[in-house]
Image 1 (cartoon, helix red, strand yellow):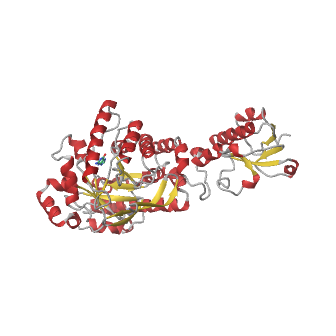
Image 2: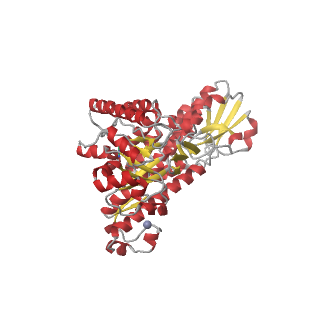
Image 3: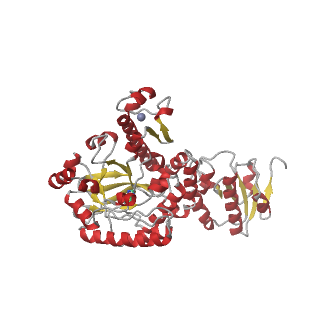
Length: 489
Ligand code: GUN
Ligand code: ZN
């Protein structure tokens, strides 16, 4: 059996892939616009015009209304929505989490999704919110796992509907991981990460990062992952870099309803906009004032919101192709201090990221102190043992005539540290870095240099402080090497 998900390009833990469904192949990462079967601000068939390849709707809502249910059962879901591409259907789990109780069983909703011809179905998982007592998270997870296994027995693998296995476990990272491992044993086709909407609504991006990473650690790295309820383009780069492939956006319509205008740097209230910072067809044909006063303002805003959503996803894919996704993540995470917390948390997982990050890619660009904790820097520090240095060695950042007097010439470059001069043009040492390193970058570089010296006790090192560098670690270094200050000697 050929795999339904084929990864074609990688960067960090992110990837471009091809997901095969009964209604065609989609290229990931991608966003599925959420279609409310009751109210369609924008028709599903128009979604292609924005760049959508796939949509998602709610099978529970369809099953609850006689006209919708009967049409779907008679003519199929694709005819009901007038969309000929892949359609994913959610179960009533979200309604379950909001209203506490719903009138459908797991078995009924799975059978219904199959009967209407859904391309990807979702069982009735329990979206356990963040921060609940551990006992509740554990018992709800038990129920979820039982239902998912029942669903897997009901839906034949490799025949018609793909089956999603949502990962739950609230904010308990060990439960997320255990849940992911358990689901992987039953071979679902897509793994959504569930109940993350409350984290995103309250800007808890650091906790979101932990949930994604702990879940990913329990999943097969070649399986497609869906971040349930994530539709704000501001966080696409971050989530993709952590290995999320599918997203769904109700945000484009929900925000429009509240007169909110999405940009990758954050959201504006339409009343606060004097200018439209976008070149989509809506923004080019209206002024801010015209948009505010338009009778169909909400529809126009929904269209703009979709345009910027898909624009960002294309930018993320281009970044993967170029190998500079982490640079994009670092830029995006500066849009909000809570996103910056997410970035910092992501790099506490550099050890894990490093296992996925390609060993060679485009030039490393230093974008700020967080870059000092990138997986590439960590990888270099883990490989210091590979350098064997004997005799005399000079470490400096700029070449000088004296270099010839030494057996070894090492280049000092923050945030990496010291490496043989021959590697200067080799990735990642060909990095573009500021000529005046910040404290964090210098800390990393000096720590790595000290370790390199300690690993080669028989060599005799001279460290030339030829930048205008000043750092407390220089004192420690001076106990292991001759430290020279060219400006003062
Ligand atoms: N939509 C947003 N979050 C969830 C979730 O955890 N489970 C399901 N089934 N749908 C969702
Ligand atoms: Zn626009």
